[in-house]
Picture 1 (cartoon, rainbow, N blue to C red):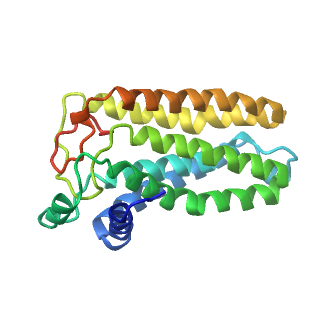
Picture 2: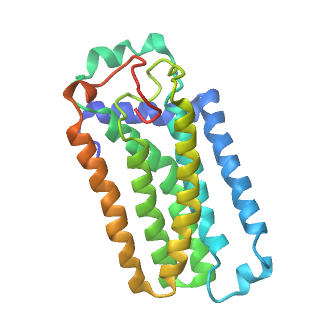
Picture 3: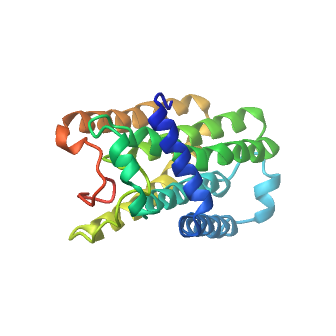
Length: 246
């Protein structure tokens, strides 16, 4: 929830920037297009396209599609956050916001969820409902929502900026490792998680395995943030990031 006027104002600024700025919209649209191409490739790799619709059990390829779209869209939004809208206009945020009160993460979290789950979750539910029935649709959509929320938290691990208000991040010596982490995240989120879900849907009691797995990730994120120094929690408007997830 956005509890303060500052959070609500920054949230509206970030959401409108994505929709009104050609540069930011092109980045997000490009990643979404990449997700659509990857989804089409996965669906075309199914043994029989006809079986995707007529089979009683949902195929792994079908289950993977919303995870692919979710990952690509969130990573595209996360990258767009690093592109400044107008650096000369960020003085109002410097003047208005308290650096010691962390306003950035709730804002970024809400924006990411707005542009992903607000349309992806209903689309996933309706498509699954048409092919698999109410129970499978509810379970599949619930798993997608929970996994997407966890992905958002991971992508905002050390985030402490108001989106679109900081200079471009400089190239770091470990930027290559960050790119590898993005690729590994894509493989895990779009391949291994759907495989686990496919295995679980055959027996709904197996879904309990998701609770400790995702709980461990969220607990690790919470513990990491608690151990951060106070200076690393302050709101920044300069390029002082140590990684792509700052």
